[in-house]
Length: 156
Image (tube, rainbow, N blue to C red; front, side):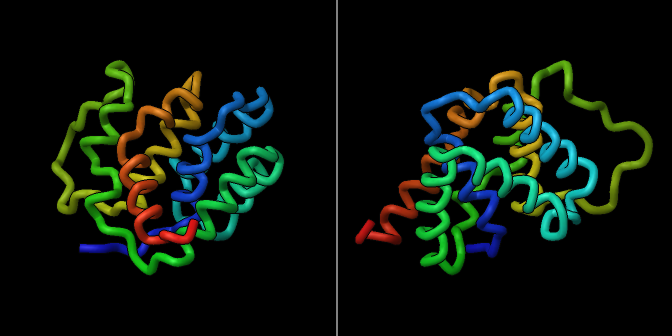
């Protein structure tokens, strides 16, 4: 099975994982703000949040170069296999135990399952992390995505 996803967030996460330098304090603060926005207004990704994310990317030369590389590779891929995208269980591994919530009240009728939601959740976790560079490097699903992209783009 494959899925259509927003490739901006995927390219950002792949590029961020490759980053060799730490983000500046301002960049970390901006990333944290993007995470907060995704957490509270995920539907505003196209209208507002994506622009803020692109500002972070364009302001960091190394991140921007890597982002452009992954963005061009993703353009050649129509759909990404779902097994390469993070699951809810994978994302929950990044949530510190003290942040896990307890569900109370009625059980929701529908489970939140969208892969875009999981990618957004991961950006939220990375943005809220004290060391976002280290957190993103621990994401195994990004390594699988990189391998898939290198196989899908043999010329690069």
